[in-house]
Every structure is written in C-alpha cells, then in structure tokens.
Image (cartoon, rainbow, N blue to C red; front, top):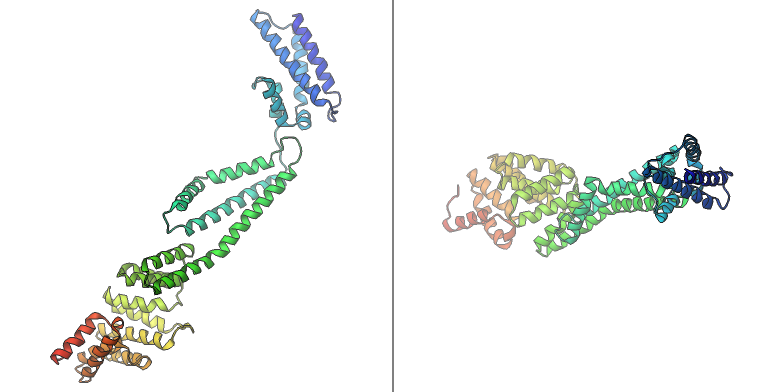
Length: 416
C-alpha cells in the first residue's frame, strides 16, 4: 500500500501547486497541469497493480483519492479556459494516455455555451449559405439544362448532393467549426472570414440572378441569327437554353414555335405558341401563328377566330410592319370564317387584309375560294391572281391552294 500512498501524495502536491493561482494561472500553469494529469495516471496504474494482487485501497487512501479527484473535477472549467480544449487532447495523444479516463477529458465536463446573438448569427449564416448555394446551383442547372456534356454530368452530381442535404450539412459543419474556439478565445478572425465568405457567396448568387434573363436574351438572339441562316437544329438549341434560363420568356417560346413549325413538328410548335401566350398575354405574335395551326392541324376554326380577335385588340410593336401584321391577322380571320362557312364575313375580312397588302397570295387565294362558294363571277379573277402570285411567292401560299388555282386555269371550270 506504500506505493499507492506515495503516488497519492505526488498527486496531491501537484494538484495543490497547479490550483494555487486559479482562476488567474501563471505562465508555468501548463507544466504544472501536466504533472497533475501524469500523477493521476500513476495513481491509476498503482491501483491496477494492487488489484492484480487482490489488494485494495485503504479507507483513508480511498477518501484522499476521492477528495483529490473532486477538487480536480471542480476546476474543469477554469482549466479548460486556461489551456484550451484542443491542447488537452493533443497532450493526451502525445503521451499515449487512455481516451476513456476522465482526467484527460476534463473539457467534456464543460458544456460549450454560446450567447444568443452568436447562435443566431450562426444560423443566419447557415441559412444564407444554403439559399445562396441553392440559387447558384439552380441557375447553373438551367444554364446547362439543354446539354449532356461533362459539365452537365458533374452538375447533376452536385444537385444530388444538394437535394439530399449533404452539401448544406457540410456548409453547416463548416460554420460550426468556424465558430468553435479551440483555445478558449473568441474566434473573431474566423467569424470575419466566414462573414466575408457568406457575403461573397450571396453576391455571386445575386449577380447570377441579375444576369440570368440577360444571358437568356443573348441565347435567343443567337438562335434568331441561326434561324435566319436556316440552321434550325442549332437555333432550337439556343432557344432551349434561353427558355431554360428564363421559362417565362415569351419571345423565345415564339421563336422556338417558329422553328418547330419549319421542321413540321406542329404539335411542339402549338405547345410553344401557347406557352408564349401564357408568358405574355399582350404579346400578339404567337396568336396569329397559333390561329393558323388551329385551322390547319386541329381543324378548329372557332378557336382560331377567338385567337385572331384577341390579337387584333393588342398593341403592335413599333419595330414591326403594322400593315404586314394586320394583313396576316385579317387573312387568318377570313380563313377561319371561310372554314366556318361564314362567307360574307370571310369576304369582308379578306378584302380588309388586301387593303394592307394587295399582292398577298394567300389572301387572294382565300378570297377566290369565298367568291367561288358564293358563286360570284369575280372568283375567276382572284383565281388568276392566286396562281400568278403563288408562282412569284411560293412560300407565302398553301400548296393545295396553288394546286386549286392551277387546276382552275387548266379546266376553266368552277371549283367547288
């Protein structure tokens, strides 16, 4: 038992020396504290050796050890503040001390308390990081949405991390580490760095959100240039990117509808024209094209008539040729009334259209059909105009109308 008594005395002397100037420890406090912890290790080893010999502490030794341990535990907080959590852990690892002994884990007995303002700032920064990351990744996803290249594949992985919360959780852990004070001092530098990083991340997100519609317009303009060059596939890709960045971009939906119509994909063209109208009900251009397709592809002249009537009430863009726009609208209105067998109204509409563009082949062909249905002898002259203008402007007249005019010129008979 003498060995244990000696170890206990060393432990008592070391503890008394270490705690003599708490809570204002001197410069050599760390050296004195290490002696206490090592002395406590020696006591534990001596007890273990005695246990192997089936011997145990005396009542006095047990009381002395209990009192000493109680004194050490009571000073866990000032010791942790004086030395720091991480340094105590470094000592334990360097000396190879057991991790499950309490005297090497004194910081575990001291709860980390954060003030309300600091905790609130922690969560505000976490929320801002999550929101900023969401915005940035969503905008980049839209930017690459139309592609299947390597950046798109990598991006999908990042989005998956965001969706599962892994990325946000990582951001939160980063913040927690930034707020942790491993040496007992307030981490002002960490906070400043973190706040600067959050401001930068939010600024990037705001800039990307501001630039998103502008980049969409650039893609739309590129698509329009490619469309003029008859590079329809490339034009469709640009329009798709523009719409991905700005889903409510009416002009891009309209342009995409035009491109789909040129490649004879009428269902998609109709869908894009409808989306353009939904995006901007005052945008008159898709109404006219959609009305024409409702007559040609859907056999729904009543719906076409409603679309044209709506478009005629809208303001025309000063950059467009007002006469050409009104010509097309009244032409399609006359066409819809012809399909509904409202011949007199169809005649009025088509004559009105020709007041804007007198040499429009499609309006002349339609008026020839209306007059033929009314058994008006003036139909022959309009059939002749339909044939002549159709030959001059083959892209501006329906093929079957040109065929009807050609047949009329060959037979000289009234076409019913």
